[in-house]
View 1 (cartoon, rainbow, N blue to C red):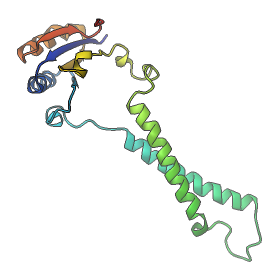
View 2: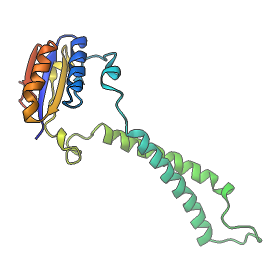
View 3: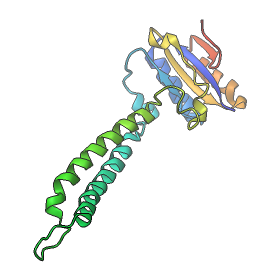
View 4: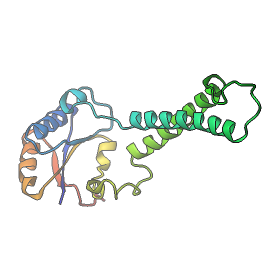
Length: 179
């Protein structure tokens, strides 16, 4: 079972060094919570890969194929005399293919955004089981920098030690409620 440990820091440099230490200790990838953007996060944790571009690509391919098939099947089902020319040709179907490519690309991009942002809250917990008890740190929205790590129960002591050595002002269990 995943157990969350949260360390609160007063400055972003300490939080970044703690995140780097946790990652180098093979405890997993920590989450940083901050009231302001922090420079250098990508250098410490690596760039986070987004799934939105895959949703966009799949939507565009799906839209292009469905647009062409819509026009082609319509031409076959409602055949008009064309005087020996082919019934299915690409140039007349280009507009509907283009329009549906853009339409489905946009729709799937929006769906990908919602999936990536895990919105609406609570809907995606069945897909991401580790997020059921994700900690919320209200101080990180005001004036503190928080580093959260989800680790096994055996590694909790090691994670707390790393956070203390990095200069955490407070360390708490990520599952406890804050009033």
